[in-house]
Length: 68
Image (cartoon, rainbow, N blue to C red; front, side):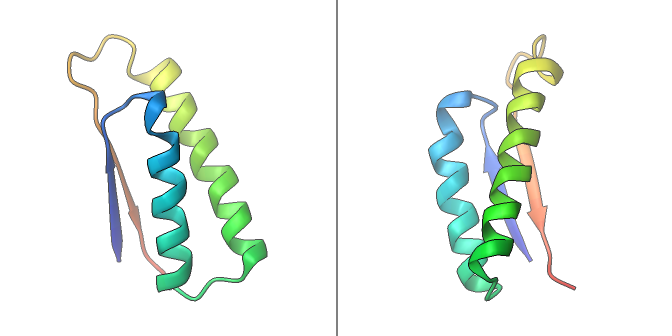
């Protein structure tokens, strides 16, 4: 399991991308799967920040990754 915690700011996209790369290496994911995971998580994160956290005082996004 890996937990990624972000502050709910679009400036943290690079941190998310780095965390996804670390997760891909830790879980031994193929480049194709890592790329798909990155696309999905970045899109979900951006949508959460842009639409779901607008009125949150101190937004935080926690992503928990597990491999099964």
